[in-house]
Amino acid sequence: MTDRQPGFSTLAIHAGAQPDPTTGARATPIYQTTSYVFDSVDHAASLFGLQAFGNIYTRITNPTNAVLEERVAALEGGTAALAVASGHAAQVLVMHALLTPGDEFVASKKLYGGSINQFNHSFKSFGWNVVWADPDDLASFERAVTPKTKAIFIESIANPGGVITDIAAIAQIARRAGVPLIVDNTLATPYLCRPIEHGADVVVHSLTKFLGGHGNSIGGIIVDGGSFNWSRERRYPMLCEPRPEYNGIVLHETFGNFAFAIACRVLGLRDLGPALSPFNAFLILTGIETLPLRMQRHCDNALAVAEWLSNHPRVAWVSYPGLPGDRYHNLAQKYVPKGAGAVFTFGLKGGYDEGVKLVSNVKLFSHLANIGDTRSLIIHPASTTHRQLSDAQKVQAGAGPDVVRLSIGIEDKADIIADLEQALAE
Ligand SMILES: Cc1ncc(COP(=O)(O)O)c(C=O)c1O
Image 1 (cartoon, rainbow, N blue to C red):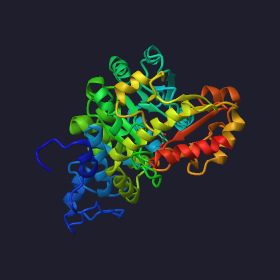
Image 2: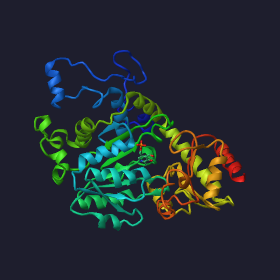
Image 3: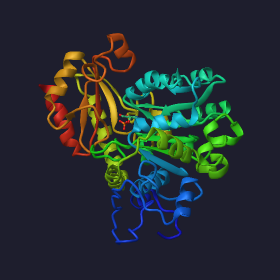
Image 4: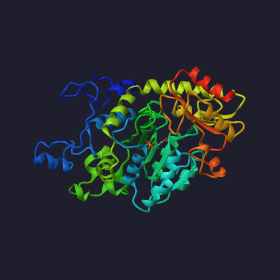
């Protein structure tokens, strides 16, 4: 590349990658190895002591994964990244670096249901306590902060309801509280929104969705924004206290503005172990090469489908922030001006039975529990993901009996609409 600052599409193809120095291979090779031969005993000692960068063991670093990490860090405008086995693993490692037992974090209550479960139940067993706040009431974040709060967690576009969160306003609340803002940017991807530019300190992704983009690999990533002053706050022992297993080094003093990514790698990934397979990293990297093209097509198709549904006589409501009348439309214009993503919900007149009939009648859409595939996907949460909840809990979670969630793919939009038309007509 030249001295010019490369654009987003160029970074999506090239960031982090070079032709393979040994073979000349142009595509990033899959380094399918568990471990790496040391040059010498001194070389091994410096790697183990964090005095030199290099590979020891694929649980901690791998050259294929390193290209993925550099690429996503470049796309998000972060200083470094750490790829892990799933989006959920990314969330565990972030909180592991920040919280000790008895600590709290504030989270938006409009989040992917799996994250709500993870925070409410599994994180409690680590002694990490979630306090919920409402993204539609910014003051509720301020009220939720206590001296035990160590982080704030939100989604840029919340799954599944098409909620756009006011990242910059919540970043200011985090600044005042002296805690980092973590943004799950899975539904937007850096093509639509770069949360670090709006004040986020850490970005996490489920790579499983639009970044990988083809419904073939589970993965997650943590991006360090490099902006948070861990030493000034002095409330984060993993970053500001000497590490006995690394000759007493203090990670923030040694690694500066990428210390958070290092802490997640050399403490969290090393000890908790959710490493990403290099084969998955290869598939996800290949997916990322076409991210800008795919995301724009996903958004354009989603807007067309949302408009069509909102004029359909059997549809009661559509919740898509790309529609001019939507309550999040203004926030969408600020945070995701190129398009409001491809995941949204709508309500069917006639409720539960109509929802079950629709998912049974579609032919092009796949009825399954995922989002962010090239293929169009559909689910009726009340009869699947949320079926164990009471009716009142379903409504509270945005999964009432009438609700259908779509993840619009990149097929021809006329075919997507025709499939919904025939399924609704049945
Ligand atoms: C917004 C969001 N965050 C995180 C996750 C968890 O990711 P993974 O399934 O890769 O663990 C998901 C999964 O659906 C998601 O939609």
